[in-house]
Structures are given as structure tokens and as C-alpha cells.
Image (cartoon, rainbow, N blue to C red; front, top):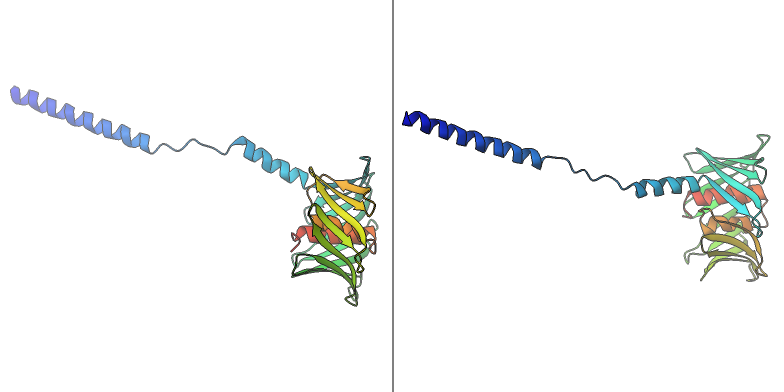
Length: 225
């Protein structure tokens, strides 16, 4: 009888030990319930939304034109959302732009350190925006003659002629990027996300608006590199 009671006691002790170990192991393999904070996901969505459309406004806040991002390029539209040009980029880094009638107007070819604006037939170079070793940018014509130099100052960029005469300034302040003339008057501005050097392309008066937009898109697409 004593032996039977002893065996029962040992068996109970063993079962208790086994169940205790099983409970401990189960607790140790529970997955970590920590998830990505909702704020992070919300911020990512906001950035994507802001990058879909770059609005350019007059000093008084009136819509002037916009660069609307597309899956494979962008559209330049006026203040009434009428399409001015359609920009399409391919995998080689070449940007093609057409007018609303689907007529090819030209190309922007991206190479290491520069962007080349070509005519519609791709048989003539028109202008080259070239990055310099000192961080400045030069806009050159087909003869590699300097048209504008774009250099940094403490508040943005300056667009100057070869004789160092100021043409425009790109000023960045409180989330607003503005193109100002030599008198300091705002020509237009944007609160959308765009590289300052890409924005500066809209200050190249030797180009028409379609060429400016295509060049700005190509520069912004490649990160100004």
C-alpha cells in the first residue's frame, strides 16, 4: 500500500513538472505583438500624395500651371487642367515630350553629370545642363557656350548670365520654393516637393515652357545627379 501511494506521489510530481515546462515554453514562443506605428504609414501616404502633382502659383496664390505625375512620366497642365504637354520616360533615361495633339516636341537625354535637350528628330542638340565639380550647374548651347550659370547661395540658387548679371533667384523658405526676378519680385512659387535645381529650369528664358518642364522633370527624376 505504501509503495502504491509512493508511486502515485511520484507520478503526480512528474506530471506537474511536465505541465509547468510546457506552459513556460508556450509563453516563450508567443509572437511580439508590436506593429508599425500608424503615424509612419500615414506619413508615407502623405509623401506619395504630395509628389503626384507639383502646383505652380503666382505671388497672389492663383494657380498658374501644374506638373502632374504619371506612372511613366508626367503631364504639364494649365490653370484650367488643360494638357499642354505629355512627358514620358523610358528605362534608358530618355525623356520624350509631346504636345496635346500628340506631336513630338523634343527629348531630354540623361547622362552622367548632364542632361541634353534634343530636337524632335533627335538629330540636333539644343542645350546641355551640365553639373560642375564645384556643385554649380552650367546651361550651355550647342557650341558649349555658357548661357546661364546656376550657383548656390545661403538661401537657395542664383541664375546668372556669363557676365555674372543676376537673372533669377530660387529662394526656399518655410516650405515654399519661389522664383524671384532680379528685383526680388516673386514670379511664381510652389509648396510641392521638387529639387531646387529642377525648379530653376523654369527660369531658363531661352527655353519655352514645354522645354523647361521636360528638363525640370528629367532633372528631378534623376535627383539632380
